[in-house]
Image (cartoon, rainbow, N blue to C red):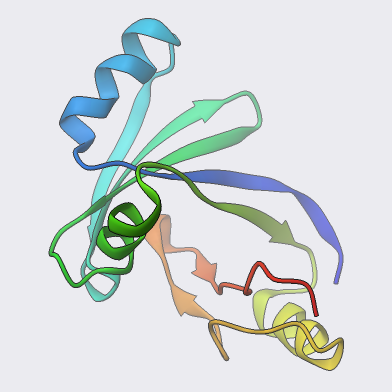
Length: 124
């Protein structure tokens, strides 16, 4: 798997509206996209930071993965997304061959129309 760069940093927040003023007014970043990803039960806001992005993740219901994350760990960094040169499906196959635990067995559509998949953060 060839990682080309960090695509974005995902940060779990309770409310995008409450979090955005910090990122925009204190850090000087600009939100360029807000969208809802229905199947993931999440609302996202993207801000550019140089060549990468910050993705704010707000749960849209108590059953969402992000709501459970916030309940268990609090708000904060949820994931680091890497861009892969050989495609997400190939990266998943390679990760599985190296006995890395997969959260997603196949790519799915994420925010901004990107193909995404999550790997478990624990070491093999």
